[in-house]
Image (cartoon, each protein chain N blue to C red):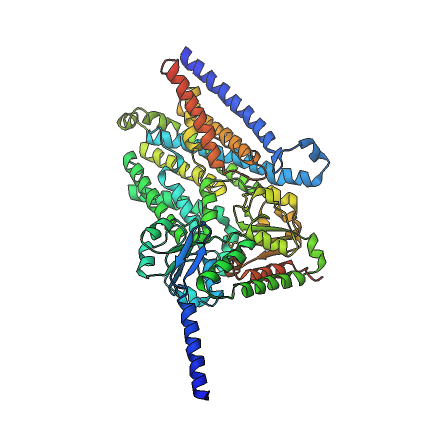
Length: 290
Length: 338
């Protein structure tokens, strides 16, 4: 065959393959157990959960997002999209006006039934802990018809392992208290941030039996005498001035890490930036050089 | 005369009973901690346990007692001043003013380093107190003095509603502070230390004395405004002073422990259900009753789910409301209306 004919046939085959995959219907099962069928991979996506926004962008489909919720602030291109409210007060009219092919939101969102009754396909995902992140990555990858999900997950996993390995073996004895609100609400072992801490090898002073975010008696923290305190809330001012807290080892040795609001966002979102969260916590857990 | 002497004796007995209950509750409070009921005798040998008892538990329990006393006192004054059995210390907008000030402080913190430094020094307590005072001053300005009770009441409600709406808006614009605001609105003695106890005690004594001296105005008001005026009482000045006492007591309590509902409302009713007496004794007994109520609620809040804490406002409603309900049923079933 002449070269021209061959290149023409290659081009035709490529076009046919592209057409075939693009027009392939997608079927996913969301966290409610509902099966959602779309005629083709969605081109206009609305995401109402920051971790899902980050997942979509990490899988390379950031350009397909047309609207996000008010808390989605990463990456910066997503932050510039129209804001459609939060978990409880999502703007149904705004969402429908954007003519989305699919809306990705949390299972506990209030507007699911309203959107479905208006004929908008809804995929409800709720990543609460570390295994959930992998599952949500796979589901979103299936929905977007991209194969990258496993590669992204391997990258995250490698990042967390690297963060854990950057710490000396003595970190296993480090007892950490993580405060998420100045009430005080603490992050327990079963919370997402507690699980990242466990991956790094450190111990959480709040046991799993108390739940993910227990409202503690401050005396409990004084008794537990943690070595490191991590504060992911800027309203926790004057930690050292609380009655009885000046004697806590972490306060005496000045091992109180205060995360900025942006860093706090990374730490509490079960999404693709988990490895960065692990790195932030590992930096805090590094022993102070004497 | 027989009747009056009997009632005086009854109020003395109630006062003594409440004082005894207070001592028992404070002693119990030193034993209730993050492990539930603790063995106090063990602390004699363990310095860490001693430090926990003296630095954390005793000031918390005393703080709850003092805050309850302030709220009970303010409740009795409010109910006498407005001649309304549903009046509570937060009627003049002090609650909304305090919560708006706290919301603004929580939101603005972190914006500039100067704000941080200032906030750490003054603390949320100072901010809450300032907010409560400003709200009461606003109410007085709106009502143009404390001459007319109805106008004062209306102005207080207006200020309360408007400031409450603004503070809800502020929290909505920055949802990061929602948890901290909710804890403030439900009240807690989590971080009450010795300095907070000192502040509350310093405020409680003059308020109690002043309210006792002004109790004649409240007694006169029960006969109606015109009758009270005809009795020769300098009503306008006394009313203004009583509003000042109300604002000071409420502001001090709210600044240290947050907005604990129901104590100010229930304490005077609980006292009145046991003894019938004039405002002079009612104010003191109401303070003691409020102190006992809040102390008991705080103990339960700490001890029921240790090491987790329940919001103390929930327990004051359950305790105070439950007892009032029982009293109402008992009153309705048997004895003649008093």
